[in-house]
Image 1 (cartoon, rainbow, N blue to C red):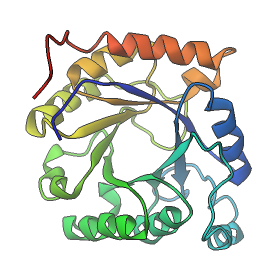
Image 2: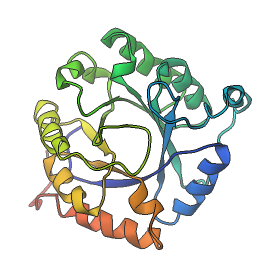
Image 3: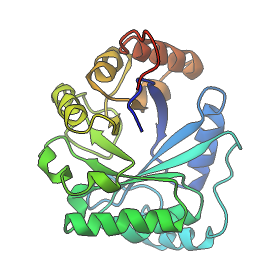
Image 4: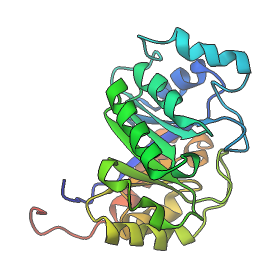
Length: 244
């Protein structure tokens, strides 16, 4: 796949239960076709979300096998696994209808372990599998996994797992470097992203912008979404013809 500047704005939810996912997906369905679901276990990330809010709720995933959260047909779900043991959880989420899944490179024992996990997620039904990474992680860790990645998901905040943290400007140079090393790789940026930063991020090489509190705090999320998208599109260089 050849890189084409086509920025996507993806709303995110930090769910306490399946109902949170369903409710937020319905709210966003008027202006987005994707919902990004943050999943944290309280160990790898500082906060705790579904299905780790209550240890007994881990059984909830088993009960959902063969079905999906009840969301509008126009919507697709992507999971960002900020957990210490992402492999099995990713397989379970793939089976219940998550179309796109990323797990943190820092959570895997080795590059080979990461490769096995991504293959397992695809075998379980997800269409896209990718690697997520913290902002302080050296980019060299990507060398042995990018050939099996559909995308790279990079964090643009210091503390992962919760919305509202400040955007870290270092991410701009990180995205530029990833784009230079892997020019055809889809790059997603997550954490503190807002209308103020999306244009520069797209110009640096990001194509997916994960938006949390900027939409959640808006009195008119549909209008805010379009404003952010229009600003992001300004980051694309003018195209004189077909990109090849």
